[in-house]
Image (tube, rainbow over all chains, first blue to last red; front, side):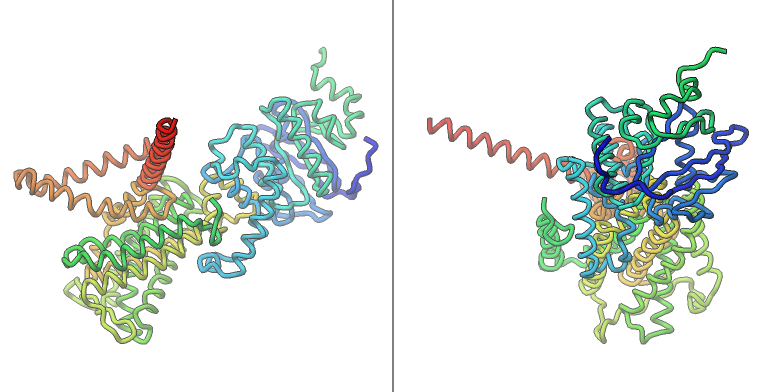
Length: 264
Length: 356
């Protein structure tokens, strides 16, 4: 890719150091470390059950790893919770869709504006002028995201009624609405057809390119991963077996063995 | 539809205007019998207000809570004591402070929601119901050491003017309910309501968007208890005109829960529809019993039939229309609109054919 990036890849924004996570006796992640550089598109790949989603859940604070630390912008974060990470500027989507099913698309995306909403419930109840101003700003930003994702025609539909592919788009929209500096995408293209996947790739790259948002994504489609990511980390049985540019990964014997199997 | 005022569409504003004209002008002009005010309209407004409280915590925030009547008792007895001991506060001031006292109880009994959910939370919140009633019964101070067990509520005086006639009390209830309903609507449609619903629909995702579960849940419980507290104070002062802990027993909590579910979870207008249905249905059943069967059916049997029908309706609504009567009403309006527009098209067509 010879084009000039508006946001040059910079220092590490997120560092995962020696994370180990076990559920009872089952080891999901063992002593895993990798980093994510600012403004890059970073993919995490690996066979089923390799611990990819668990990894994201550790970064996001949903799971508490037994060992290891997560650093954000060089600062180690103690007691990670999803809320603290959101405040630091880390947003995410979920593997099995975690949308607010009974709320409309617009309302879902508006929830993403939570951290840009400073007014309290009393001010909202009384509809003070500053509430109206803030609400308008949040609505404008949400509408922008809706038109960016080309989902204007469904913005008032309750998300529960939408097909899967569209729900995935809404979830991306909700993550975008937070204006986070880093977004974790857990299988953003699972269950999509080729066309939808192409659309999703376009959105991810466009966000990365125009806003400089760092993207961390888990994906199974190798073609997609190799196409859009700057660097790839490969997990297998909870361990890192490869880390590098797509070309390096494709040449990595361990990775090939993990994916294609190896004769014993 | 484009919002005219914030999130309110033109249709919402007309609805508000229609409701106001109906309740302020038409009802007082045409309904002259006291029975309607003392036995139907006043309890309807009070219970609808309590149901809004239940809606906030259950319909919007998705926390299964049972104990609205406990908070109502807290509000009612707080009101009695405030008027008795701090007369300078005035009626409106006392009403607000008693709501706040109920809200404090709401925060206390809402804390278990952080750890338990579903049916377990329901059991945990029952504590509020029993604890508050027990507390009022146990410590004579709350009843001003009245030995009779039933205390007469003080007269309502606002700015030196007594509000003692049924019509005047109706207006007091109407004013309070209108203001609080509008505030609830603002919250429900604004960022506050979005946070509640986000916690209801998917708490992990809400937290990942920066919504604090602790704050949102406790806030919902507090606001809910505030509404119940104010409703309880009005219920005691305008409807019962007396204060006794027995009036706020678990049956009332269940009644409010039914109003909430039948009306439609997560709707404000559903609170009014549900309350009206639960209040009017026994009246209707009695009228049918008296006029159709001429008293051949015993009154106790009628009240049993009432329970059976409520139970059945609850099950039917839970299965077929979890969004309750508010949704049915919405569907009805939509089908009428469709029918009107399709007949409009037909008439245009037929006139077009005629002209040919």
